[in-house]
Image (cartoon, rainbow, N blue to C red; front, top):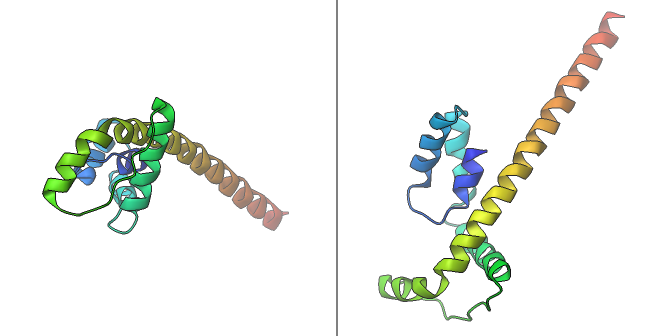
Length: 125
């Protein structure tokens, strides 16, 4: 679930970070790196807006209503105002969704193996 955790981090080169942590914790490298693409150019705005809103709720601050502009100057000036809620919400969501994914995938794997064994036993009777 390293890839899901890294997907929620608002940093450049998430794939390298995911690869580093996948190697560090002996996770599947290919799966970890590919899961980072949950955040892609289409999904980044709604995901990071969501994590920003979660961060404002966790910190008890008000969310800013800002007109968007995609220029370097705009991003750098507004980053000072939104970085703390964004980082807080991103880390919180990264942990929560990684844990949910871990347990969901484990539950699916157990279900899959049990159903496969039931089919196998029923064929041999």
